[in-house]
Image 1: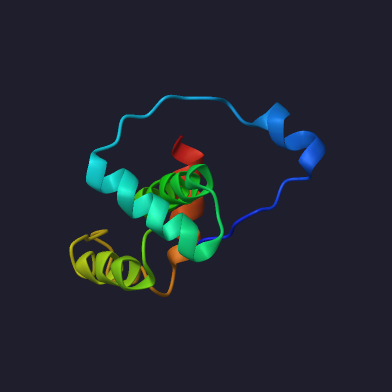
Image 2: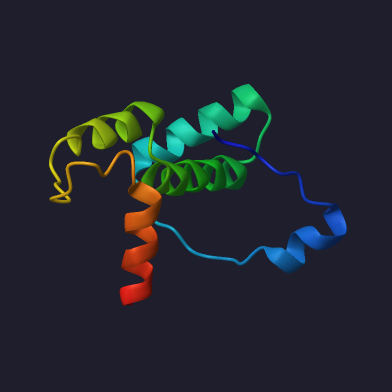
Amino acid sequence: MFVRVQLPSFRYHVLMRRVQVRLTKAQLEALRHESGCTGRSVADLIREGVDRRLTERTAISRDERIRRALAGVGKFSSGQRDASAKHDKYLADAFMLN
């Protein structure tokens, strides 16, 4: 989920760092159009895009987490036939070995 945080104006310039970014003509025109339609600055739209990209890279969807969990079902074997009944004992024993 993407959440935008509004910074108090007195802290805004302290927390922000200036960078230079090169955009294609089409990218800049699209950003300016979006800026005009939304009333937001081009810089704010770029920050939003960066935030979304970083969030997407680190966030794993619920469906992906379920897929990964199901992919591991039946892939491992403890060698113990009663592991579901005595899992606490086996876990405690394993910690004692380390």
